[in-house]
Length: 423
Ligand SMILES: Cc1cc2nc3c(=O)[nH]c(=O)nc-3n(C[C@H](O)[C@H](O)[C@H](O)COP(=O)(O)OP(=O)(O)OC[C@H]3O[C@@H](n4cnc5c(N)ncnc54)[C@H](O)[C@@H]3O)c2cc1C
Image (cartoon, rainbow, N blue to C red; front, side, top):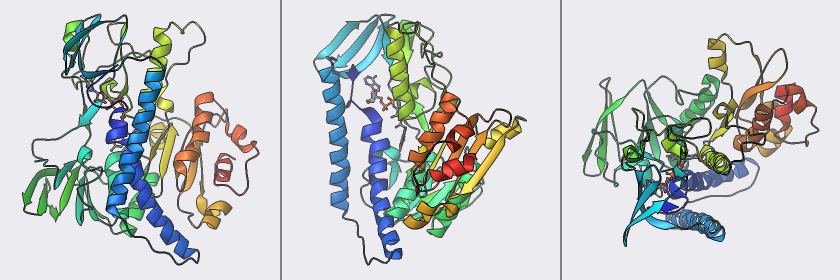
């Protein structure tokens, strides 16, 4: 394994782990509010240094555990930058000079990096990329988040929970434009309740800075000013320094190294996985691809081999309330003229949600009206990222709504809403 930075990659350094660790702190503050509503007198205040230390220590523990696991399996780790030098050759540029390695099979898993347009003078101080936000130099007084996809809304949620005023620049008329409008509406309502300003239908096109103030100008003439700005406008693949041409590996027009259903590139023994493969940019998908590639390299495809079905990948957005979905999307299915049974129940009808004092959101299950097979689902509410696993198992294994209804679930539990929505 050749790694130029740390094993564990972006997920441990900048993406999943630090973001969720900081969101957890914001969540703990919200729990204090909930505790007050339950009759406790409690107050919370953020100790920013302690927060930084906590995030760093979680990162370190996960890094140590991945490294230990690799070493215990006898994986040779080379610190350096890798590139292809031929169909079976890789060169690692290490601190001690280049090392050439011959290989029967090669996996390209170099990830991606934030997209930074020319009009954004990123300085790591007031104008930030997502890689400079964990932990941020300080908790911003007024943060302007550009981009309202998954990353943009998570940051909006996180910083508003930590006490910042946030303005979110939304290029369409809905946050999370790729998601179910009913799901997005719950999140928008929560943002508005918390005082987040939504600048809808606006595309940022210039950023300026004067001392401690930043200014964002949008294409419709509107402008907003704040103390910090954070760019959440997508990522680009790390394929430029791989020298794919040296091995005859094709890169598409967007820089992705695409693979087939076994994750093989056009050169059969060279595979690609993770963000660089241009599939779903999720850690969970990247690691599943890695597992499937290992099976394929070892020739384990003779036994019943389950291919990765990207359409059945569950994903979550760690806002408050949480959002999670899996499988078929309702709007797309109806647009394609597909017959669908859609059932939805609010958490306000769930005993556990009422007991816990948080009954926001709903569960929605999509199934085939003829067979009852569960095709997808969305959950908005407390614990959505955990609860979606049940729907994901159903979608991945062709279970029916009746299979969920007939399962004897715990009472009182949030999961009862899954059975209610399925029935
Ligand atoms: C803010 C944010 C939050 C996210 N949260 C989640 C989440 O909650 N859940 C989730 O599933 N996904 C999340 N993601 C997405 C997730 O982080 C990525 O999909 C995942 O990290 C991709 O893994 P990867 O292995 O492809 O790339 P990476 O994790 O980026 O790993 C690639 C590695 O390759 C190394 N590298 C690159 N080029 C070379 C080279 N030439 N030689 C040697 N080494 C090289 C890099 O140093 C890096 O360590 C989030 C993304 C962002 C931006």
